[in-house]
Length: 581
View (cartoon, rainbow, N blue to C red):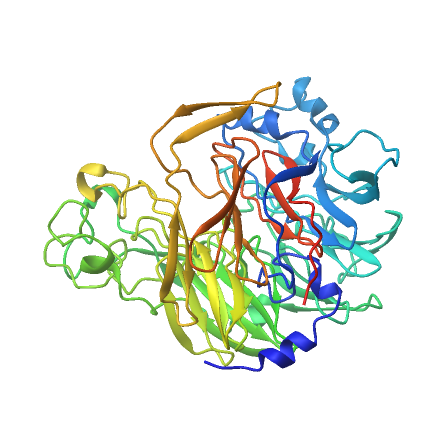
């Protein structure tokens, strides 16, 4: 598979060396055009979430948050910022902390900038090396996430950066335009004639090459956001001049079913209850965006979004739009897979397998061809590959909750799938006239399709990173076999103890540099660098993060690695500034 790499590389600007939005660029490839620095030293750190400890205590030790990627351009770094003062009313007992956290919090952005040695600052960051990372300003948004559906995972607050502005999600389906030099709010941009607080910005913001901002909005029923149908949902485009247009999801997925197949009852295990069993159905609900799914934009201006039925994520679609938001095509994520019973699941009639005699390949929970589920707990977003094809990660339970990564052509034809796709926006590395796809590739210790180990067995815990070819075939796999749980003492020394080997990769997107070196952080507290052959070429301990949040990384234009852990931003490298292509 060949394409004009030389032409693509010739068009890279200085901005292309920066990390301006989710996945680095409008296509979300997560790839830098500069060599990353080696992870040898922490050059700066900044605590951006003052509520992390309180939220972890509130959720039994887990940090159920999706954090934004650090945005980096030149010597400027932009990170989410949340202060402990917003927790006061909860701590003082006015509102129970565990039942209504989100309305009590404020999401904002802090701008940090690198200064030469000796420049005074306000105390944020760690003063080491020849430069310091100093705070410039903090701007708070009025954004409120869609209400908690009872599972406690906070949706992602994700701005996007341009040469002169930073755009922040705001309330009622609007966005804020902020001057990136001063942090001054320049205006609230809205596609709606009236203010309605039951509308929520549902996605990270995406900016195209012309400075237009794309995002999705969902209008929920105030009294029953997850039990009553949506009011409406939209894809929004606001151009660089502030002009807004929108299109309703109901006009993008025409002919979506009204009744959707659900799952067999839990008392009928093993599934399916019989060879010809028919699963029950229920109302689908209207089509709306999956939460946390950033629109992707191809070089030709095609806009990709993901839609799902409000009550049933197994009825989802990858949707392609023109730059004017006109519909090009909508491709279903159903009836594409055939790897259920007796394929990815143990033999039928055995522990972990489907009921004896089941039809090969079906999803045991429905007795139908498996579907890629658009799960609101995920932050997986479409990625535009160098040949114009589109990748999107979905959830599937029957393969031990690993999900599937789907690939579609630029025209909407299904091209194949890989059997991991859970909460990952894959990175794409272009090289040698082709390209590779890098994903986390975890094996979770859960049953094949239910919560009963006696019936559904239990998978082996294994935590890997995998590079796939353009046709989604494995090229290499790096497995985390670390058996040391460490912590950094006040003296700066480490204290470690032996534990069962393997820690989960706490990323929803890795970062890859121009040479194919992959950077990812793990719950063991380490930042890892893995080269294009799957060999570990760097590792640095930051801070242990068991039960950690999902944290994307970024590579700066000088090769500095910006990674996150436990509500803290770390700038990591070897201090040697790199040059990009």
